[in-house]
View 1: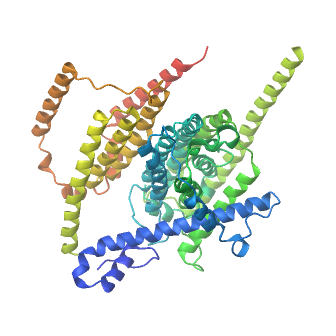
View 2: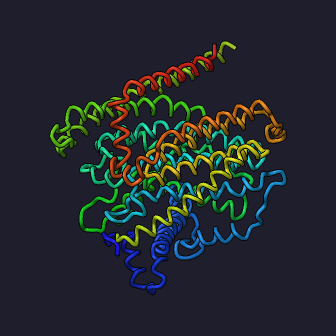
View 3: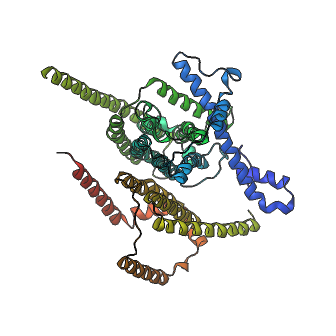
Length: 397
Length: 174
């Protein structure tokens, strides 16, 4: 028997179920079977929600652009993802003549695996998780950094100039944005005193995006860049690079890459929910897992909104944005948090009380408003000068 | 969890250990023997991953995560970047000539390291004892870094900062 049988997606619950169902001579398989069942359930949950998300994204984008969007198959076009998948699978699967075939075939698989692996450490509810590591946060950063290698593999193995350029650009961008992301996370770790995600969720008596608005902004911007969506979608700048590192992919491999690409917003919304929005916490009206899903949905909609309204940045603007404002803001957030902890920490218990959290968040919001105002002023005035200079130079010529 | 559960999982751990060892050795051989440099780099990444798995088997999760973060996320990416920036690397492959001097140096180094590792009595402390003593390795590593090893820690950080500034000086345009 196994303890703690609560939670919708809990290993012990499934283990106990199998112990009842399976005949006694198969008992040695129980462990393996329950692990596989849990993994199957979670992975399929993610894949189905990704399929629904593609429909949601297309419909919402269409609404933003005064179109209708997919509306033919099923009610409101809800079966469109199935049609897309069938189309992708039945297409001819071409591999370039000079491609490195093994690496070419492995790249999409690696991309999907690294995207899926993140879900392992996320607590979806008080007792719903696949594995509770006490290094959860570092695990997430480490696993997402393997993504870059998958993109490299795809770009290199295609033997295509544009695929290669796309891979190079995106990898440069991914590496750059990992730095502000990491610094923003350290701010949270200082408050929660733990690397385990369940501890981070439990320590959020107030959601951390209220306590650390600057850190939240840095992390949010960096994670949009990490999943390379507009305004940071240099990875497939359609007008410049074909479609980036997956130019040569077709058929089922293209479907896998697209799956990973559309799953990334969900995964990153899940990470942000856990780190900043208080994870599965919420009033007791609904089960914890539902609160989690609602928060993830709100974040996803917000990301979609950004995608629909902002144009793509140039690669130099993207790099500039990472190194100057985001990096600086992240460092400032870290510094401010450290000082606030020294000031407000209760010496006896080592914890910060809820009322002190409210004071800290008040201070941080003031800092945030001042800093954002200053940064927009500085960056804006520089651009104005540049435009003025180029204008004058043209007149002289 | 009862005792039967534990013995079963220790047998599973044994199987996992041998599987990882085999993969590790094969991928390490691949780094040396593969003709394509890019594939050799990928094989090196597999080797790093297996080493991270070894750390997990030894209950050192923090080391495993750092292994993945630094060796795969940073160093391997840097390696691959260097390979991609090298001209015509995908057409011309590296030749494998037998180099006597290298062979001797590597052989001597191997012998010395085997001698040294034989000397250290690693089996003084078993895996279970280690996890019992330290609980979560993260806390213990953090405590050691800011208590006993503050000076080396700070010296290393200054060294890294110097390297960073050096890189900036090298690539500065003027």
